[in-house]
Length: 207
Image 1: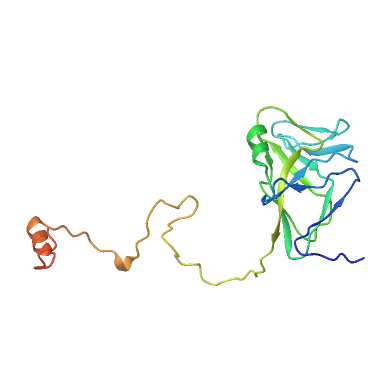
Image 2 (image 1 turned 90 degrees about the vertical axis):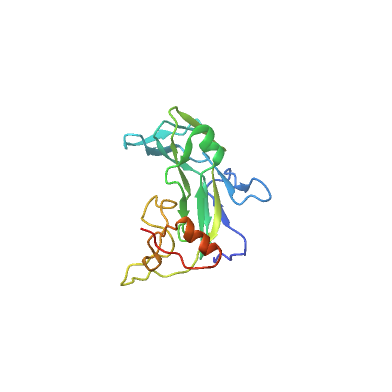
């Protein structure tokens, strides 16, 4: 059966009937909220601060994230993304600020040909254990249109485009002045300044 895509619609499949679908928090919200969904899950996995893999029980319906842990949090959602689009997943401000829980990959990109369950990669940046419970909002996401472009090799390095000089951390450090307009400073004595003001004579370089 072929899925028909309707403009402004993102198709979502639930891996369990009890999984709660995501929704927009307000009428003008740019992103929809994604929640941790424990329905149908027995364990969760991740890596600890020493890069050792682990699997823990999910029987209580909650996930404990210790400092430095990186956890794959289940959502119970499979996005059927239209071709030419992607889903971008971002951290939630409140969760980052109050609990130190952020996306370990900072932003996640789901391509249109990915048709497996979406997991949110959370990490704990605080110094205490954090707990998330079934149904807690853990991330926000948006449907983004893909811009078509090609990757093209060029034979000459790009030339200076603006007043930027240098690489990383270079903005606001120096002003670029092309060589052809660079001049030596001209110092005018008081007499020459008065002549220039009256429109007589030309500025002279004073030793």
